[in-house]
Image (cartoon, rainbow over all chains, first blue to last red; front, side, top):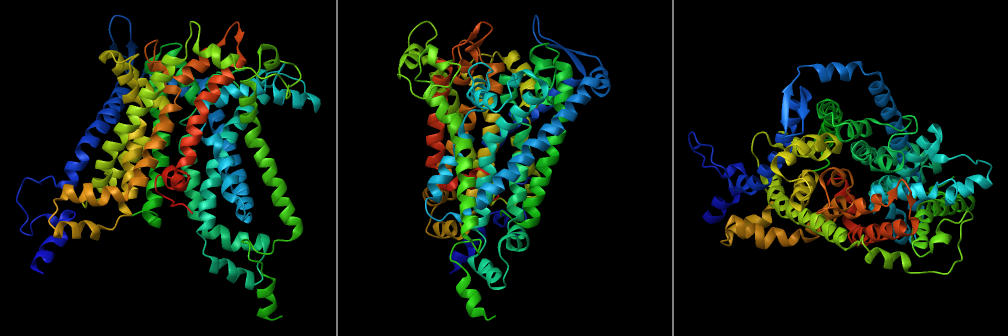
Length: 311
Length: 291
């Protein structure tokens, strides 16, 4: 008995003696477990973060050893006055809204359809999930093959429907193409998450709705969607954070062209950093992108806290 | 209008009132979704078995004499794919393994700790995972150049850990949070040390979590292009780089490219489907638990 009483509060902070050991806050078992991972993570995140800040105020020289020449606000002034940059942000927002929006709508649609299928749902879902595991760069290259104006399968289909242009060669169609490639790859993720949400709606809730005469759209609008709104929000946030992380598809298909039509911010950053080797300016762009992603991360964590989705 | 008739009318299938017409609509929509999803993949697979003329025929060829030439050429000749595969396996494998080991330890600590500032810690970890690759690559490029880590497998492993490690910590902590603390308490009562309780009681219960975390980390690293294109050189180029290198000014060997594409994509699809049950948990970082 006494044994149990002594041992039960061992987990966590309560393990500290009630008398509160003065001064040195002893690192508990949990702390020791976290130490190796967190040290490495700090080295991999805080050091680069500080380097990024330093770089954004410098001109970076790479020849003859790495060196930073402090140039003050030059990169930032350029960042805020660069008209091309503003266009890139605008394009990024359009790209972001289109891809994530289409993925949400189609993903939810597919999930609702799958949900009605009782037999073979697992096999169907398994097949529909496949694009998610494909390397985005391969998706881009495959997209290039499919849309090639002389031998591409999709170009051929479009040609027989009356469109004969070069899909990746003209701005509007190139933009649509890279959006659709992203949609092809990531819609399954939304469908998967939504389906998990739908399956967690208790049978009794649906039955009650049916008994009350709520069918089809009514049940969806007033019963199902409210019940899975948290899950949908998680899907939206998860997808949003990755939508600006990955730009491989654009990089290997159009490289930002034609005429900058697909040059979203990360593509411009890569070009600035690794084609023109203007790493200082690239760092300024990177910090701005980071700010955006931190807002999303903040929302995600707050959502988990408020709705108690985990822990 | 009794409840009896309503109850009888309600079919067993979810999303009630499935009329015949709407059922056909569902079938039609799913067929379209399947077509949209699978045609590019099947076309890639098919094209990888086509010879040079069939693969760039103006009219798509569905019936053709299949050939293994593309795959054979990939593994013979000057640009052997072997080293690329090896680099991919090493970089992705080691980073996934390290991420899972360190992630399991740190994730357990994070799940059980009661320390002040736990939420800030959690936020820091998740925001590291969400940091845009482009913003991470730029400073890492400078640091790696200083440390001589450009064009090396350790460099790639470290680069992949920037996203795999926070992912693994966060996800493992979600899996550990599912394990009731009372189990460890009884282990402690039975005389185990904290480490023994972790190692012999908790860890075996999260085996599926460990496997899921490992596979997802593997997929993320294996599929990476953005880091590898900057950090890798002749001694460390990975498969996605090999694929993109086939795109040249003079033209593209689409037969070989679709063959590499197949080699890159198929193993990850199999690995991903192998952990399908835990995919939702994994890909939502534990925010949604599956089915």
